[in-house]
Length: 256
Image 1 (cartoon, rainbow, N blue to C red):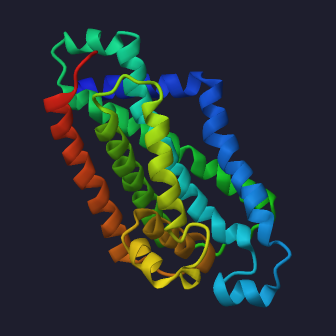
Image 2 (cartoon, helix red, strand yellow):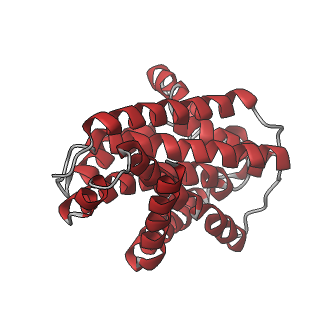
């Protein structure tokens, strides 16, 4: 089965690297967030930033959060890839071969996760160009990257599960808007938890983006030791949805 997964995964990578529009979405969109939204607090007093954001640079604060949001957003491409393969008949050709449906699902999920990881080095270099100074914790950095991998796996699985029976081009985009915005603004990706009302704090505490953003800040901004509980949360999140997705794919995935 792994041979089939690897072969299908390579196809996903080739599609990513050959599509200039995919690169525009993967790279330009988060850079625009970083430059425009990140500059929105550039005039804020340093004391205010240090009190609430624990850093003098809002771009440094937003960077791990924006990368976490981007990892969620690119998960949508997993479900879009399913829809595209159905509409062009590729999925039908694969399903007539001795390839398990779960292998197709795993390849799509790994492809979506990889697209998210491609953003990390680009965004880090862009932040350095914007004058961000990092206070690195190497151990926490490794933990954060592992956490981001499982965050991408979890959301790529979730998107694929929701749209696995759909061949509607609009479905992934609609689902993305329904999921992304509530998750983004109920997390600490853009603003600290201290700003939230009590009910939003409760939602934030169960939001995977919050955990990924906080681990990223420990690794890049604060230089704090890794928070194992946060990484475990992300690992469990990714594994649970991956398992659910493989079961759903084996039972319900079909070419339309």
